[in-house]
Structures are given as structure tokens and as C-alpha cells.
Image 1 (tube, rainbow, N blue to C red):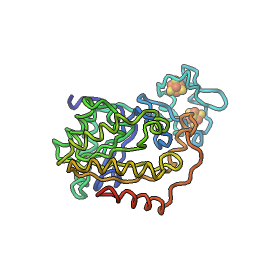
Image 2: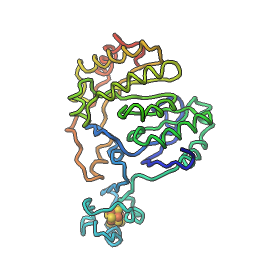
Image 3: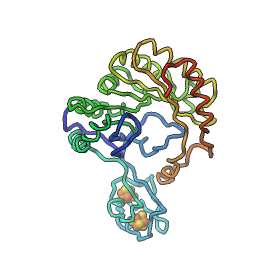
Image 4: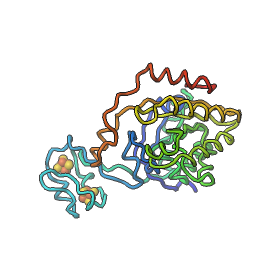
Length: 305
Ligand code: SF4
Ligand code: SF4
């Protein structure tokens, strides 16, 4: 573990005012063990690099087809045959219309620190820092833990966004290295959780409990319910989540809970990856409904954001 440790990211975003305090640099890791039906970053799920095909940008020059040695680009439509494509990225490199785009690149901790350090003044002035999300940071533990530690050694505040899935002994180090942790609780019933995300929630809830004990004094732990209509927005689920979180508050740490209302901003990206959007058309939860659920949470939880 050191400055040359590598990880695969699919995006970075500077000057964000979301996902942590103050002004932040967001780093999005590639790869996730879950497949949430509402995922707004489908390009984050596969741990390997992928080609996004933004048809609306295509000017029909045909360069991708000529350059593809694997004959993976179809004549006329310039669609990619994903069974044949090796994700070499040659077409994306030469597509000046930005229609074929490579998503995912390998970076070192050193490169990320160079990017992060550029905005130190903004973190200092705003009480901000760095947030690592994804995808799932726990899937690239060595890289993420090293980056978090390096930030900490440089007095830069850190946060991670996680689904909480992983072997405790393997992921504990990442939790220990982060100052603030945003931890998703998607459904309290394990069968429903499996239906919505592809995995049961036993390990996640166990990690949440262990983390709450670990975070007793020196961490902000924020549990999040991504509220998705028709999926996990029953009163029962929200109430059970509130009870679970309130049972962890006894540990004495800085624990809070918030609701993230569903949005469908990532829908186009499924098309660009030649995938179907997994959900039917859904109405976003209204402000009133979100407020109603917050009131419900306040019955049990001390800090509802
Ligand atoms: S190189 Fe880009 S713009 Fe040209 S045909 Fe291929 S996808 Fe379209
Ligand atoms: S990524 Fe490589 S193999 Fe895939 S379509 Fe582009 S040039 Fe062909």
C-alpha cells in the first residue's frame, strides 16, 4: 500500500456541495456487488472499463467501424456488438463526436492526491474535503484505504458512500480510515432486499451494527434510505429502518438518518450501455411524502436530516 497503489475510477467531480460537508472533490469507483434496480450510475457496476455508445452524438462518419480490428461495430448503425467487443477503447479514442466513450480508467493514489491537493484552499475555506463513492468503494479496498489514509495524513477531511456489503475483516480498514460514512439501508426485509439489489441484507446489517460500535466517538455515520416508489417506500420498511438505526444510537456515536428520494437521471446511460432500464416509469416521491416519512423516522431516531 502506497502512492503507486492503483484503482479503477469512472469519474471525478470537483466543487461538489453534495455527499459531505462543505465543498468537495468526489471520486467515483468502478465496480459494485449490488445491482439496485434504481441505480443511477449503471456504468459503475461492472469493475472493468466499458464503452458507452451515445447514439445522439453520432455523426455517422464510420471511423469506429473502420478502426475496430475485431469487427465489433455494425455497418450502418455503428452499434457495438458487445459479445465481440474487447473494450480496447480504440473507437472511443478516435470518435471526435464523443459518441463512443470509454468509461473507467486506472489511476494511482499519487495521481488522485495531485488532483485533490489542487482544491485544498476550497476545502479549508468551506469545511469540505474528499468523498469516495461509486460504484462501491469497499470493492477496491486497498486503493480506497490508502487514499483515505493519505488524505488524513494531509489533514484533508474524507467521506465514503457505501452499500456496506463485504466481509467485515476485509472492509473494516476502509471504515476506520474515513471521517464520515454514508451507509445505505435499502430494505429491512432480506428477501425484498435481494429482489431489489440482488443480495440479501444480513451482512450489510451486521456491518452497520459493527460500524456503529466502531464509530462511537470519532466519526459521522449517516444512514440513508434511497426511497423508491413501489420498491421500498412502504411505511413498514421506513419504520423498521428507523427502529434499526435508533437501536444503534445507544452506542453513543454521531449517528443520523436521511431519505434520498428516487430520481431517474441515469436512465439514458442504460441505453448507452445497450441495457434496458430496470424500472417502469415512476413518479418521484413528493416533498410531502418525504416529509411524512421523516416525521415517522423522528419518532425513533434522534437525528433526521
Ligand atoms: S466514430 Fe463516432 S461519430 Fe463516427 S460513426 Fe463511430 S460513433 Fe459515430
Ligand atoms: S472498444 Fe475496441 S473492440 Fe470494442 S468496438 Fe471499440 S474498437 Fe471495437
